[in-house]
Image 1 (cartoon, rainbow, N blue to C red):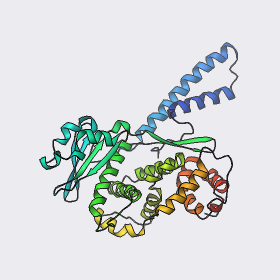
Image 2 (spheres, rainbow, N blue to C red):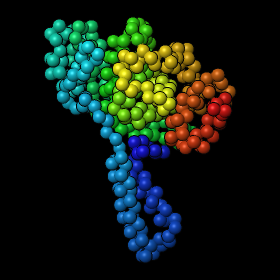
Image 3 (spheres, rainbow, N blue to C red):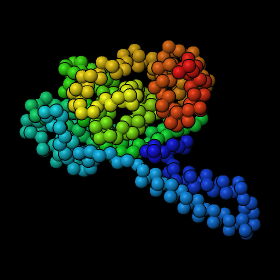
Image 4 (spheres, rainbow, N blue to C red):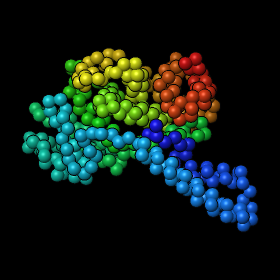
Length: 342
């Protein structure tokens, strides 16, 4: 599967990397001195360009496209939220889009174009829930702000993944927020923390992707969330990897979402999902900072040893994917010593 592009250098096209590797191999095995060497060098360069272009084209042909009834473009659209609807508004046309709302909502200051522009800032998307008989809320999007890749440093190496169709995934994440708000006090607790709202939105994303048999994008989301906390522990606010890992592993044993509505799915699965407290997340944050932080000069294998097995278990699929299983296990045994018996 070529959905993810494994790289150890950020912000460089993978076909260029392959071309350089190919050219270096030619220089290693063949004497490139003199005029004859120059000719071989030129022919080798042309060959490497051809091969790397072919590889890149092959990767593109195998990259799946996420089917959806919503498109991420400059036109407004409606999406169903149970028995209500939500309006999806690209920020570039926010004024025109908001005119599609009922008159009773257009007068609210929180739903003004200026307030939405200020609130969304540099984010790629945000949701505004409303109290209305037929309207669930507004989803503002600016797809051009969506990151194209996610990177994180492990020791002296920087790893990254390409974020394929990420704008579409983020849109469905926001749709999930509105679905979960509608379930509060019913299938979900009445009160949810900000962190719970975020990982629950990715649970909806999992359900939606499973409906369309696109769960490889759920793996992309898991790797993205793990790499994000490796990059910066502040990203724990959106760390849905524990819940996504549980769902993906359970789905391998039995289909969790076959012919089941999201309301039914959440009613069955919510009590079993990892549900960390504020204290839990605070401890994970300290351990992640001590393990991956820029100022770390040496590992402390026993630091917060009671949290290390859980952290290692959640990070392991991403580390296996990026580093390969042997290297990932070696890294874990060095930096999270309490996890070495996973």
